[in-house]
Amino acid sequence: MLLSVGRAIDVLESVIVTAIPVLVVVCLLTFLHYVGAQMRGPVLPLYAAAHGATATGVGFIVGAHMTVAAVGSIPLGRASDVWGRRPLLVGGMAVGAVTALLLPLVEGELALMTIYGLAGFGVAAFSPSALSLVGDAAAPGRAGHAYAWYSTAHYGAIGIGPFLGGLVAEWWGYRIAFLGSAVGIAIALVVGLAMPMRPAAQVSGRSRATFADIRGNASVWAGWVVSVSGLLIQGVVFTFFPLLGHERGLTPAAIGLVFLVLGLANTVARVPAGWLVDRTGRSSPYAIGGVMVASAATTLLPHVSGQATLLALVAVFGTVIGIAFVAIGVALAASTTPATRGLVMGGYSTSLYLGLALGSFALGPVITHHGYSFGFATGGAAGVIGALVAALLWAVAGPPRSGDVGVLSASGGSIGR
Image (cartoon, rainbow, N blue to C red; front, side):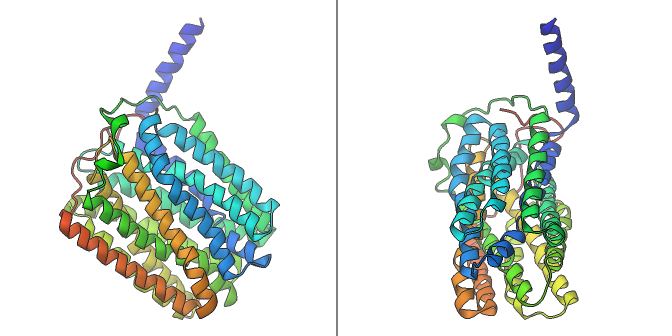
């Protein structure tokens, strides 16, 4: 009897897995997870400042999170190559939910930095596995399509999460916003645990791949460098714009609206960007151009006045960043193989969080001593320099093209192991 029930469950899971593509599952989990996680985004700087933290202190708190995420992403991405994607996805969401519950219990800079730093392990576990699954599942010639939908889910959540966090903070206070973040991540965790995930076929040579296999790949390094640059300027905007806006009289809800517009523009740009990358077969020009335009927008941000002008500028920022990071994801997927994809995407995640950490750590003291205009301009200049270095590396390696990327069908497969 038990054997019959077990077989029936296996058949049911097989039907569900066949009916629900891997890409859909990854996008759903990514959206739910990051809506919850990003609710903390605009709230934490304001909460820390309300308890006496300076811009430098806020930078260190946010930078600790990004640094831990950066340091953890490569080994945890490698772990997903060896142990499978699912344990890292589930574990990352669990860490995120627990740390969000701990944030409202403390007020000091050191305690906030410690807890938010630990939360970085959650995104370090989740992001490389999710990115790798997208590459594994992409149909040949459709990598742009796959990464466009994944990043639409991701950055749609980055737009909605801060907006919800700002609203909750204004209506019920900062601590309730942290609790809302924990609930949102917990919902994603429940969905992840409930979703059938059957073992994927073992990829030949996956467990033997090492960093030496990608160390000399200039195209991979170009993708990592431009990722650091693009996220450095985002680190400046996401960490310090709440303080700049508060100084200029914006309410938490108004600050949340700014991030909502930025996130929605970022999201809407993703699918057209994926189509464009697939259509042209090229990714590096969109990556470089997007980061350079976003760097210019970052420099202008402290100088705009009026809500309409501010929202228009952040919409431009979000659009070009959306195009750039679809292109970067495709370029990296095209520069590697399934055996090293977790490692490469771990390096990609490290680059993302390293960029955010640099934007928070390095620019906090600059803004404290020289003001917002100089600090945002410094971040913009760093973004341009990084984009030019990546362009040089891609010129040496030859431009990456989106060709055969995935090992699983985009309309089937599994997110198991």
